[in-house]
Length: 265
Length: 356
Ligand SMILES: Nc1ncnc2c1ncn2[C@@H]1O[C@H](COP(=O)(O)OP(=O)(O)O)[C@@H](O)[C@H]1O
Ligand SMILES: [Mg+2]
Image (cartoon, rainbow over the protein chains, first blue to last red):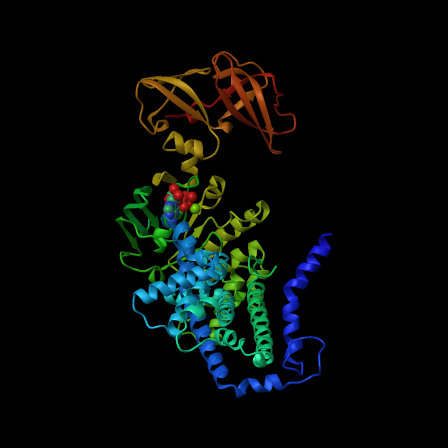
């Protein structure tokens, strides 16, 4: 009974992702069974589409900027959270984590309203802003875990042995939270790369990749190319997420600490 | 007393309005093994961290080795610390942990590695340099923390409850070794502990702290025999208290009767009126026969017997009172023993009682 339920769940969850590469290699413009033959021409068509290449470049630079920004801000927040107790700390933290549970469409619309009211020109930077906002909760969750595992006396021990505050942070704290930082960067990058709603609302004349793809859906002939691109994106996401988890676990093992938290059990 | 290497004057420190150190003054001599002893929360760690430079007092002055420490950061003070958690750097091996403080010294690489090996040998960890930090046992972590602090040859070594994470057997070994190490290097050690036995075993002098203040500073023997207050007496070792009345130099103690006392038995002075006397378990004994005429003794009934192997402790409820005294007796062959519920006679040595 339970097994049947789990099986159905997995089929519904992953069937579309399995279909993606199947049709990406299918030699037909029609997305339907039966399959007609194997081809790589949809993949070959990818670099030959200039707008597509441009949107990939836009998406990549947005994802890199947003993940770095979110990680830097998350670093500050997590350190403050680990080191200082102040009244209302839980409330502030809860507020920062809010985008995690808020419907993305709400975040997108309210950001758009604020930006338009301020008279800000919509462009790649406004998307970076939105993506930083939704990546922050993940960055903070990961980095809170990294700092939480840390004995506060360790940094003091380094100072006691002659380091300045900054040296102590760089020589002791930073290496110990590095896995968390890398993990946060990779997860932020992945989230930003395939985010659609905020990008759709806040993008100006430079569409991100998901926004560009959405526009292409109106042209059935281009569908197989979209399938090919989707296949690449899924592969990239899986690789990045596994990489993030691998780095995090290796860091844990190396410093001999117990595994706590993380997104995969 | 030699020139003080640590001088604390009127130190105040509070956390969110809570007074952690209250007008505290203290001198610690060079080369001493000095302990800060007190119950949990009395401010021992705060005092140690103030000396190390991790806490800034609101008022008062701290002088280390003759130099005022105001405005001197923790990394520039002639102190090193062994943290309660040991704070071993988990990403570095044992040699890098121990050599951490030598990073920026002018020594050559080979001089540094010699110094590291020497420090490791000093704490009994010769050849452990390549071990990963997380592969160390509790006792080894403590040794690494010691070597890491001592390699810098500080004027003062600060130790915050270094034995509290160790099991009893290992704790006793480490207490011996720490004492030996201190004699060997001659550095001033300041040990924080809440364990009175540990403080008595290890220290040249002990400061007993309550509520952010120093209650008494004395050598272990003096602290035990001449506690400055009832609270100190109660905290160090075991002591029974009995109500009494004082008139001139004569005191009348419930159950025991009258006896003469001297000034030195009363840290607060001899004042006529109600008082309280305190007496250690080993200053009383159980008698095998009823007291002879004129012998100072009280009768009572054994309410509890606690067996410690070499010794037994008897709680005796004194006849005609609601007070219990604790008497210790050596368990010698043919010696006096008593059962729970047995009627006994307790004799005492009036010269050793304290008046509070
Ligand atoms: N960082 C701090 N913030 C707030 N209160 C503190 C802090 N450190 C210590 N205290 C308070 O100061 C008092 C003394 O603490 P501490 O020096 O750690 O005692 P001990 O080491 O003797 O157990 C305690 O009441 C404790 O709650
Ligand atoms: Mg403490």
